[in-house]
Length: 97
Image (cartoon, rainbow, N blue to C red; front, top):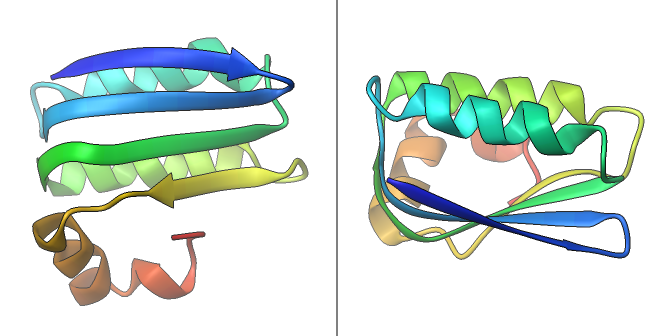
């Protein structure tokens, strides 16, 4: 997995490419922790994510909580496979997708 970050006018966009699983989730968590204090809005561009495991979903939920009280966390450009996982887990109702 690779992550690149754009910080523009209090919006942090994390461009994520690859699998978000047990092995790579800590890297995403570190990127969230590093950037959460720098922005009011966080965006996960997930156009390059082909799989997300429960460990990855845990990081997404933690990021959602970290951005509470601000403009929030937004998930964009989800692939069909990843969107299906969020739908099956019921997180589409709780997250900004």
